[in-house]
Image (cartoon, rainbow over all chains, first blue to last red; front, side, top):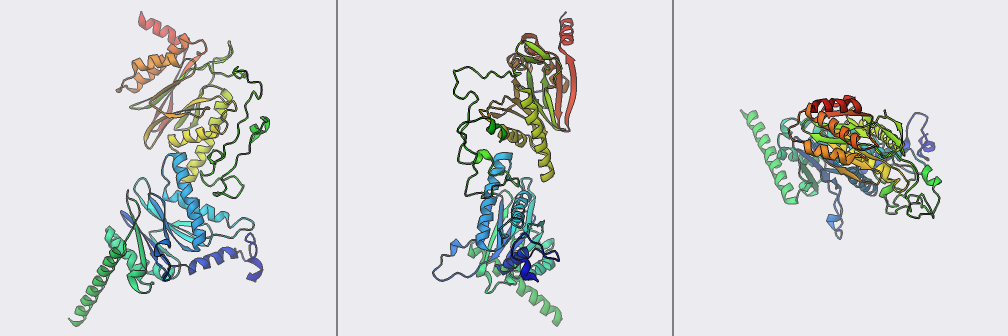
Amino acid sequence: MAARYDRAITVFSPDGHLFQVEYAQEAVKKGSTAVGIRGKDIVVLGVEKKSVAKLQEERTVRKICVLDEHVCMAFAGLTADARIVINRARVECQSHRLTVEDPVTVEYITRYIATLKQRYTQSNGRRPFGISALIVGFDYDGTPRLYQTDPSGTYHAWKANAIGRSAKTVREFLEKNYTEESIANDNETMKLAIKALLEVVQSGGKNIELAVIRRNQPLKILESKEIETLVAEIEKEKEEEAEKKKQKKSS
Amino acid sequence: MALANILHGESVRFQTPHGLSWDSRPNDIGFESEFGDGNSFAFKASLNSGYDDGLEKKIEFLHGTTTLAFKFQHGVIVAVDSRATAGSYIASQTVKKVIEINPYLLGTMAGGAADCSFWERLLAKQCRVYELRNKERISVAAASKLLANMVYQYKGMGLSMGTMVCGWDKTGPGLYYVDSEGNRVCGDQFAVGSGSMYAYGTLDSGLRKDLTVEEACELARRAIYQATYRDAYSGGQVNLYHVHSEGWTRVSQDDVLKLHQQYAEDKA
């Protein structure tokens, strides 16, 4: 049945599906994992770094992008589509500053991106964007925000979320472990993001890229050394937990 | 645009920049790619095409007016006269020159009455749409920017509008002067119109930092009165508004002749 209703994007199937949009969501599920966490004074984005070929320059593969000084996003899905969306979003951030003399709120730019995506689910001859985006940042009143958009053009606010391959596993991990004390300070929030990614990436800290925005500060992408330090802390904590459990059992 | 169709000449169609938006539909999801933003500047057809011998345009406009607004510690005071003239004929003594854009934004009218009221009503619509979309009130800076951008597209086509956008937003009292030449200036006090110089004189001599609301109102009323006394094109009534944190309030409407008697009595 699906075969007949996925040709032109503007056609609904008899049971109310837009198959192109659903196929776009499948494309997203094939992309590498990205996780976003909203802390109290910090917002964290973590992505799974795909291993690069021997001759490829590592730096040119960037999945975390700055939209404006106080907003950035990570995506999962088709990189080329993401580039277009990011370009439009960056222009809109500046247009907003020019016209309204205020920086965008995270909700505004998310709404813009979502409206853009929706437009492509309702035009002739175009396919939807094959990306989901996690948009993080601080509004000018200092509130941290995290939003997620998907190819259908919907957007929601989240406290923590993951997109891409194994997003479900990561999200379940976050649902169990996102507590007041796990985001108590900046360091803990970063560790939570790394812990969430370690669940699904192979070979540990080398394949993780982490970026943070602190209030009134620009985006900072962590160096691999800093990530290694945090991973080491996490390993230590795990061992201490295991030790405690052993002692409890023996006593 | 309709106006462009009337004005013939080598006017180029406004183009949207190619790299950024490839759909020819009007872009209503954001502020990008407005007509004036593109790299191509449309050729502006002049009103007196070919017969420009240095004379100004012959269309009659109601420049005769006095409007003023100033910021003080308790907000913004806006005062206007109410006379409309067509040449030396007094067309009306009861014109409303303050346009209530929304409960916390005011716009004054100087220049072409139709231009002012049309564009400010359009601004009111845009402000309301902004409020609904973004779930918060529009700032005075943004409202005045929207108005300035709207009329800039018609620059050189004969619009005549000199307005002050006054309001209160989350950064406090706001006062911007916007005109059809494309000026948009933020300031603490403005007076616009043929009687503006007389108003400035009174205003400058009486303005202090620690004015109370009544003192500020009286100063504004006096400034308009003095302007109507000397300027033939201003008169009628003085309409006074006060913009504060809760919005604007209509303070008073006083006939200029009655004010004249009152001030004469005070002197004696």
